[in-house]
Amino acid sequence: MMQFFAGKLRSGGTLITTEKGVMCGWRGNTQRAYTPGAQTDPAIAPHRILGHEGLERLGQRLGLTVSSVEVPDPWVASKVKDRILVLTKQ
Image 1 (cartoon, rainbow, N blue to C red):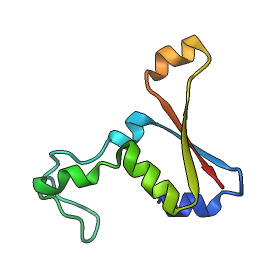
Image 2: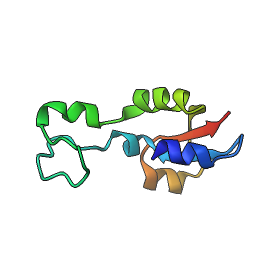
Image 3: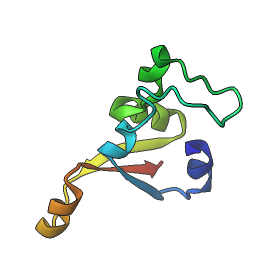
Image 4: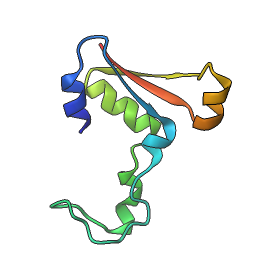
């Protein structure tokens, strides 16, 4: 999915997510997987979480730089309650 998004960006284009957005995943999910080849073994759960460092590594591979920004508006910041991550195509 990230490869698709990065391929659609022009130079200087950005993708925006939050840190919680890259920390969600499949931890503890042992339900049926609907993706062909997907594994539900709980032992591999940590590998299903991208995380901030994983996003930076993926970004480097796709020609994206990752930076975080502070939300300047206090009202918006109170609703987001998370660091905003910006991926910019080089």
